[in-house]
Image (tube, rainbow, N blue to C red):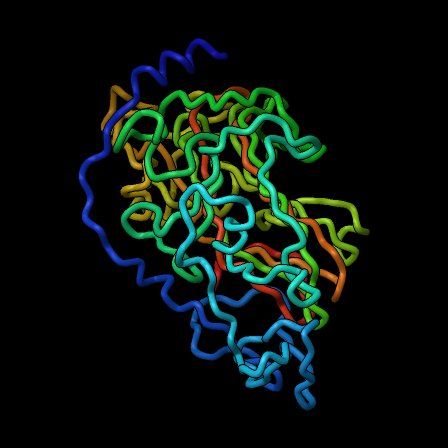
Length: 390
């Protein structure tokens, strides 16, 4: 443990100011473009990304229990007697639910045993290569996260954390920020080979601690060619430890015959192929125009066009003088990417493995969390890409 880091952590624990709840109207539009003969937009005005196809067959509907019901195409694809009935299934889930409940919170409602596709198995693990030791408080199923962020699908979202998967640092009491020590008791576990991975110009420790993995084994519907999900990464490494040995990370690792020659690899990254961390190009929910990286490899002035508002009420909003205590640089003790969406190809009818994982890098301090929601199957040809959702 870096002694400077211990002193810094001891001095900077704070309590956030009271916040006023504000609806998250920016993300209320979760519909899907018209498909099966349509060619794209049904009213969404955001930027498009990835391939845009016809979403399915252009001929008559072919009903089969091996298919999923493609939203918006007017067909009873799965043959259950109802058209476009992709209902949610997470209203009654408890915060500490098991891994199958976690999958339901994301929008995965069907078990493979019910009709040939869906969830084969789901488990929480304390490591990628072995089950490892896991603190069950590192996963959560929540109805909201902070004052503005709500589920992207249904009424619940999933949270995984290198600390406590709740609003604020649950170990330290109500309204305690994540800018505090948070050892979950899972030291030097395993993640995907080749990670942690530093971005260009930064260094990274190879030690990982407090790993949590949500491992989903899924049978792909016969009419699906891709999958997608939304996520939002938060870390209290911002602003002082940007570009340092301690930068925590989130990976989504896919094993599919349609991707990377069937070898498991991360599918969530920025346009420069950086994995998701405080150094990711999407990281912009933070305080603008303050000094960052004072305990890292390089200092810089922040841009943060996404601002601070989404951090309020989460535990990643602690206004202090971090990197420049002698100046007027007051910033949040944390930041986030905002909602992102990852898409990746799969092969119809195959069994795939999808692992969501997060960890502390270098030590067990300054926790990070990721919200995950809105899992969907994609009917058109799909390219691996992460971008802002529409």
